[in-house]
Length: 190
Image (cartoon, rainbow, N blue to C red; front, side, top):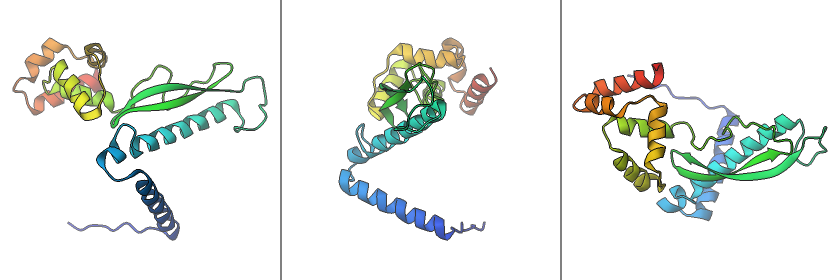
């Protein structure tokens, strides 16, 4: 098998150098321990928060039709932000969701009422499909993500996917790959 080498343009190489320099600077500032980089208040969580908040701010700017600091063209204008904790694949991240005075802003990146990023539910469903009990899933989430969730949260996720606990328990025992195929069709095809 031959590998194809990706050729970068001069601009891409310069952008990569700038990105690497920023990463080096942030690592020097925060440290390189697992907690400093991947912990709940680590570099990855801070970057995730900043990127999400920046994107939400852009959504609000588009919704209102003016940049922050400019004069609003109409009656509706920016009205601060509300705190929200969302679950990501790397654990909980606290963000500030901007809002407008009229309350008509409906963010698309993280919708009103949404508490989890895509991918988190799928992990819970996969653990459930492999035969893990609700208690085992709760323990895994505490160990891996440092987040405690109730059995009702896990039930809501598995119910949303249309997984019947008794039917799934019977089919999951000794099923191996067939169980995963069943899970795929149950979650994707109804």
